[in-house]
Every structure is written in C-alpha cells, then in structure tokens.
Image 1 (tube, rainbow, N blue to C red):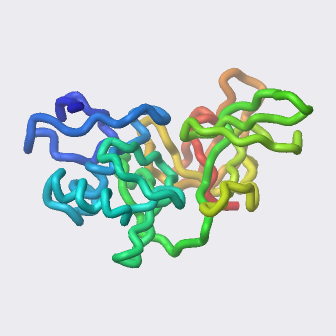
Image 2 (cartoon, rainbow, N blue to C red):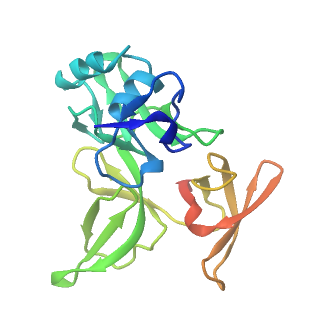
Image 3 (tube, rainbow, N blue to C red):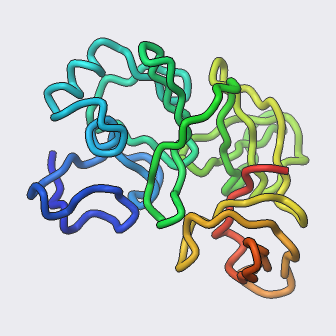
Length: 219
C-alpha cells in the first residue's frame, strides 16, 4: 500500500517532491507519531538505497524494534521506540527533532524504552490495564500509576523497570503545536482548568501548552 508524499504528516522527515508515493504504515498509534521501517531505514538513517534493499535487511531479521525483530516494510516505529541494528552496533531512539520532524537519535542501549500512560482500565482480578502512547497495553498490579507518567519498559520482557513522574522539575519533550520537538522543564502544572495545562522553561523561553502535549523523558 502506498500514500502520496504530499499528503503525509508534516512530522514525517521525507522529501515530498522527490517521489510521488511512500509506504503506508500499519495501524499503531497516531499517524503523525510514526514512520514505517521503510522510511526510517531508507530516508532517515540512509542505510538502504531503496525498498528492495530495506526488504532484504528486514527479511534477514537484522532490525529490532523494542527488542523484537520486525520484517515488514510497513511496520510503524513510534516516537520513543528503540530501534537496534546489531550488525552496525547501533541503537536509536525515535524522537521529534528541534524542527518537529520524526528522527532517530543514536543512544547507548540501556535495555528499556519509554512509554507514556494514556489512560487506565480496570480488569478482572482487581488489576489495572495501562493503555500506552504507542497503542499497546500492559497489566499492572499496582493502582499507583498515574495518567501522564512514563514507564521504563524492559526491551527483553516488557516489565516495568521504573517510572518517570509527570511533575514539577521533570524534563519533557513537547509533542504537539508550534514548539513540537523542543525539550523543556516543567515549572508548574495548572490542573484547575480543562484541559489541564503546563508552564515550561526551555532555555530562556517560557512556554505554556496543554499537559497532554508533553512527554517526560528525564526526572
């Protein structure tokens, strides 16, 4: 399946007039927050010249997304996914860059990924289902997890290794709006209005935006 490049989200880091079509991602998360593996390997990382080369790499099971080998050119990598290419000894975290475009930031592999809690659902046995930013979910025993907090999930077994709280002093990445891609620190959370808002400091700039526009990346 293909999508006209001119109709792709503004967050996609591709040349829209170079070719007419690009690959349509499989369903996973919101379209503006994902790239296909085809686009990531060919257009962003530039380790393949064309889709044929991407298919060869993926069919060799040489690309891991969140610890699992993925073989489809249409598989969507989401913002904050961790992509490993063992043959190149490279690990990347998918993020928005300073221009608001989805990019791949090379990182040291710490064995976990970041996943924001979007909402919670009560399930049988008194447990809680945590619905996450990338469209996946996990079952938790504890009631203490809060919407907006970010889980540190193991790439090996998807277990929770820690939590980054959505609170004053937390370091965040802005996901939406004119400041998408900027990193900032939370100075104040305004929770007496709907939707809730947050006041941020980014360098010398002061930013105010919706609370659900920020994603905690560091305590």
